[in-house]
Length: 244
Length: 263
Image (cartoon, rainbow over all chains, first blue to last red; front, top):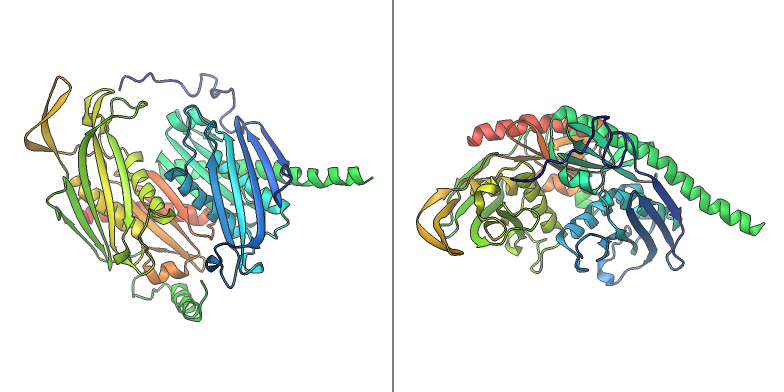
């Protein structure tokens, strides 16, 4: 291949955007951003801009899909056509269908599905701008939207990726690092239960590197978890101020 | 999800697993019997049929001349598709691929792609214009659990069996010449799947175990013992310790299978 080998980590050990290997991108989280939804959240993580909304528990259509002993969690991860460099067709791609499934399975363990038999809970995720690590940021936002909808949960689910670029294990990969790097390991976690609810990987890692990456991703998750809780609190603090 | 029979079976399966045993008599990290037959469909450029216990999967490879992706002008194209055909299980229905078959195809694809198993650069005919497109179609014929491992094996078996037709390239035209060249393969990725049942990991879950499992994890291991793909599935979770334990066992199991199949 005649591809230019671009350095992803400079001599000082800093990454393309000046971050240290174990540093997260700047994150902004807001809860309760959509008026019509029962719960909603917005996250900016680096250049990622993602909206998540929850509707339900509500009646499920078509009705024969309803389950007698629990609610049906449905999840749609979708990217806006303008969210990436080359326009993405709005029709769901195979990637989006797979991600919708793994995101649903990452959120399910946090919920008491048996509390709402015969109903559905819908989670809608719209990626408005993508910059690597959208599935993780989507999970972080979607879990907050579920909490905002008042759905009882065991813990918030938070997600963050780690990976390998230029022989270094790094946290929270951005698009360029994801594409040109050696490996990407997204992890979703319920921190209070030490439960990993999503784990994927692509690339090439030895067992030792994999262990390092998982540990680093979990550290990242815990940092974002603090921000998640702060964002949830912030919504209700601001409501109180309005009342007074 | 929780019919009486399932609950009774779940109890029985869980009770056995607590004692280190399984319903079908295997140990916790034992695979079912593996049988691979290659070259089962003459029309295909490559093919294989895998029996993993009673799970049966066929994979066929077709090769066509097509265009490369604009970001990889020097490389051939790999496409993996999976069909859960209705004759394989009462739970499979005809129609466009659902999320399960898409996930299956994408996990198999990731193992082959990320391990760089196929030397795609050797499949370039004219950079940016013409390359070989390798279609791997996974066909599930009988579902008795662990479709991922069986499908990954079938896909690899078919690729190992694949012959690319010889050709002559002149004035933008590809002319087929007599004779074949084997597909350039560098790695042999093996997928190893675990089910978590009552907080214990078991290798190669069969259908009864899949019905009662909390969650599933697949690790694809290359010839160097490195991990090249992972996929967690199911609505349960794993602890950090379990994930690392799974990685260790997967490495051993992949080596074992590779030795057995001489891949």
